[in-house]
Image 1 (spheres, helix red, strand yellow):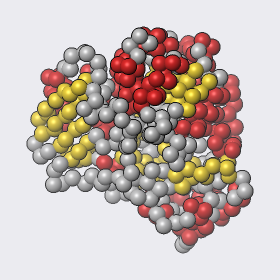
Image 2 (cartoon, protein in one colour; image 1 turned 180 degrees about the vertical axis):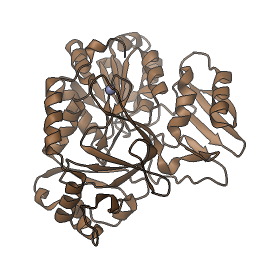
Image 3 (cartoon, protein in one colour; image 1 turned 90 degrees about the vertical axis):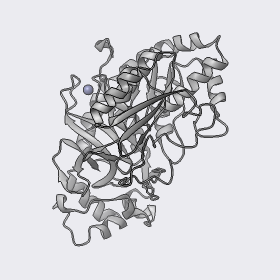
Length: 433
Ligand SMILES: [Zn+2]
């Protein structure tokens, strides 16, 4: 945040946005394209008219559970796709995605539509070194962030984050030696690596901090309050992107919002899959209007989000707040809540470490990691939680490392932050985290 003049959308970003708009089909047009060119949609839309878009079946992940990935690959693109990725498969059914070289490059081009890209270019004038620790396991996150950093002028060290070769201690050593300007990774990894640098290379730590200008993160939900607390602690700009391997991603903006690019047609549904108005809170379903190689039409991403109109000074029209995986949501007093609702409240008071919320019939118990030496405002946090959720709240501060095993190779995403211990719990824990 701060000086707004360093943020602008480059000419290339603006041209790309206009070209992208020209490539988009209508939702009905994309549904018809998918039906005419893929084995899966031909069968899936049997008995349906693609011009009647709102009555087409919504694509749930389970519908493609036993489907060959090639059935989703569109025929004209069989010889043109160069990459294959798949989602983690939260319900045991990974969603396949194929990409052409152009579609892969489009991710970096789309990122240029973010006003943050001018700031990153500016940073690289002083120091080009980047550490990229985003996942490579079946996803293209690591690859596409590398591509973006390179295209803006960065020098990239890909270090991974979940492998026994790129252990946290080895990555921390690389940070201490390379003194990067930008680190791209999940917030949990960033906090872990920086803690090890501080402990194992105390002499280098101040210099590392002086060089570090930005954290680019994705793949871990990070509430706005937590993002701002991380910025403050490390004196950096934290650019957090909401993106999914299925090919949905948003444009992070210095206005504080995440914007939905025009290539997506989004719809919201309630818990019974009744359609909701375009703006508001619900389960998100999207249609990619530009990606023809493996089309996703009315695909239920199954995150709970809030979509709103935006009055962004950079000209974006829609903002989105992800609240968490739908299947991990909880209901308190008839209100559906998710990770972000709790996180926003917990981190309002300047903390940002790991945490865990246990919900019982009458109370909330929040275990909260202290990252820095700052005092934990236990009273303010528990009163805030009690006021917001109507349950008695107990806050237990613990030292960093109690929840976040920061020296160990991470074996899961920190997705399970809410644990509903009530009989009424509807939480459905994913097979892979
Ligand atoms: Zn904006």
